[in-house]
Amino acid sequence: MIRKFSPSARCRTVAILLISFAAHLTACQSTDPQMTSTAVYEEARAGLERQLATATVARARMQTTLDHAATRVGQAEEAGRFLRSNLISLGTDSAFIEDNLRQLQDVATQSPPTAAAPALSAPAAGDASPTMTPRTVITPPIVTPAPTAVELGPRLENVVMASGVDSFDCAIDANPAFSPRSRAIYVVGRAFNIPAGATISSSWQHAGAEVVHFSFHREHEINDSCIWFYIDQTDTPFTAGSWSVEIRVDGVSLASPVAFQIVSN
Image (cartoon, rainbow, N blue to C red; front, side, top):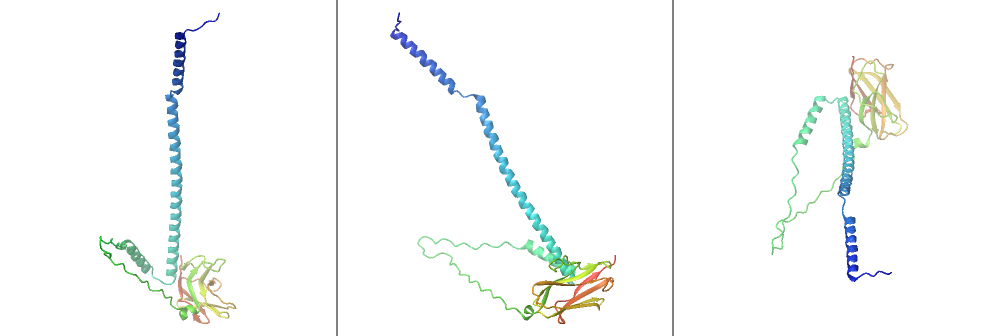
């Protein structure tokens, strides 16, 4: 037997189906509070990790900058000690050096700030000319003086006393004082414009009297290269006291005599 639904029964059935579908749809669209908290936590943790990574990179860059600055400071201090030793070996009074260093530090700390250039004010309405007329600054040309006869002739620069020389014949240190047990004593300088065929000599003096003299004949020109002489215990005893050495080319002194000391312990 075929059962037929009445119109009212069909309406009730459709209504029940619609209500069930709506309830199921609402349940699917509901948000789980635990899942929402987990997502927020993961996002916050990812943000924190990004911040930490950025901070680590910035810290590494700052450390690199500090290391570079410390290296430059060390190099500057080493250069200052080298210059001081050279000045003392040339006979400069240490008190004079300290006084000039203090004056330079005072000037550096007391220099007033550079005043900013005044700005041009804008012209008033209806006024075609500015309130301040700009000035044209003319910079005079830099004239390089012609080299003097001394600069063109033979000369010796950066003369120092040392305990040895390197593979370029230049000083490995600057040492104005030695002991009676020193192995050797070197005088080193950078020579310019020494012609081929010149005779280069050194005169070593103790207490104002010459004790050792060396010379050699140069076959080739010397220009911007180090030259040196030395004495050891076989040449003369290293007697404590004041010493000096002078380097000459063809009998003409290339620089002032370099003073040094031999100090007994």
